[in-house]
Length: 228
Image 1 (cartoon, rainbow, N blue to C red):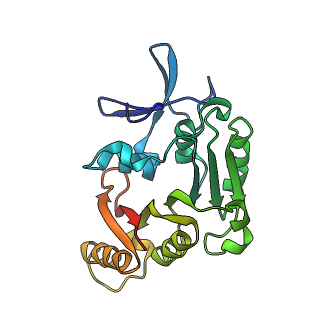
Image 2: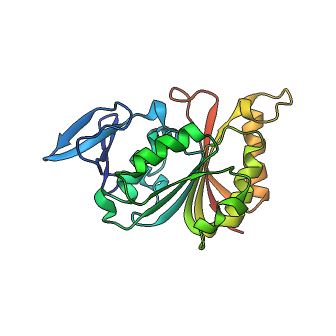
């Protein structure tokens, strides 16, 4: 068990279903010891892929259960649903709060539908750059932030968001796609190394750079800790 709700069985990742009998994106449902779990498909989730690929303790990528977290670039809710299983549980018995921000109205519709049966999930239609429009939902800083936005300048967006919303000592996860960054002709390895250096220069310890090859090609998940 990686947490009370997340388990690894062989090469398959599962989360205890907070909405019994319901599959969010067509994933398999299975019972372990009489409890229903949903299979977490890492090929459809950067967070899931990072958990499968990390060389460290996999549980280090998960936030504390029952806490408040910020997820920028929430998409249609694949990763969000599994994160909610861990963070909130059924009927939000754990008291967690998952602020899920996305710029696309279609994604917000899916997230809003998901939130109807998953209390603690707070869908937000907003631009990850424009904190003033939705930042009021986070009156206090959080200890865990995940970013997966399909916009240029991802590193700057991440740094600004962490400076505004992430506590010192908190974990910030940045999913970076090479093609979304300003391309200057260097290879991917050089690009990702420059990103790691930029994060270090802006008050983050880069604890791990996880290549998601095989699940998400041309992607790296930077696992950072804010130190300044």
